[in-house]
Amino acid sequence: GDSSIDCRMAEKRLQKVYYGDRWVVASGNEKGLQSQTLYRGEDDFPLEKAQKYINEGKRIRAITYGGETEKTWQLLADRLSYDAKEAGSQSLIIKNDFPVKDIENAWKANKKVNVLSFCDGQWFVVTETNDEPAVGQAIVTANSFEEMRDEVAASWKKDKAVQDIVLADGVWYLLTKQGSGPTGQAFYANDEFPMEKIGEKFKGGQYITSLVWDPKEEFWVFIFSKLPGGQSLSTAGDWPYDKLKSIGNVFMYGKRD
Image (cartoon, rainbow, N blue to C red; front, top):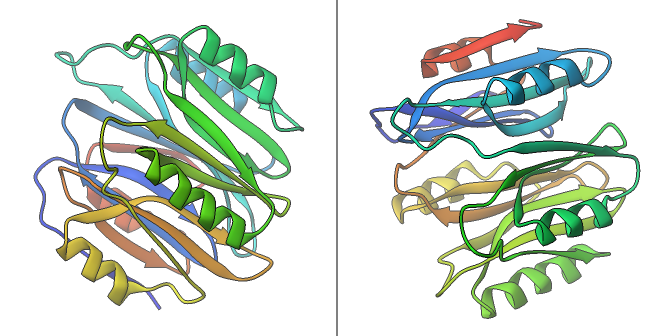
């Protein structure tokens, strides 16, 4: 069934719309955004749209793919506020194999990875020029759930926060970011969508920053992090059009049902 947890917020922004064994919509209070564009399309990845958004100075936030019967692409882009710093120069990388060289070259050029996504058998990476002297990102791979869980713990010991987790053809990929102190993150995995557990984490000020559905083993993996603006979460069996519309300042294009 559909369920939701809500933390009251002022400037609500869409953080991610995701499909595992159900649709999941995460939104939160974020400053510095004027509006967002969410494009949903069938068939091929909407490359022209992604390029158009980049050219318009919008920051690509998420690329997802999924659905119960018809699979669709979801492309989410942020238009920054007039008083916010402009998005840096972005590049979109699409490869069949994991683009390790492209990512390493991006880091060498002081570009950070904003999006790391594996959809419909292809890798999608969005990089952006970095403001800081060094990117501080790394990618770790693991061939089993247990190994991945150990790698998460090992990263935390080095004050590296998990920015995202991606599962691709049975291999886990961790994108980490070097911090200057404890990450304040938490890890959780369950074969049910754990609304009660998520509610507990929300009360403790930890919110979902990465979620992965393992379709083969049928379980969810969550990374919780401290987020200043809180979070609202809802799940639905069908495309959550009304929920997305209620967030405000999210302009939706493409397939609606």
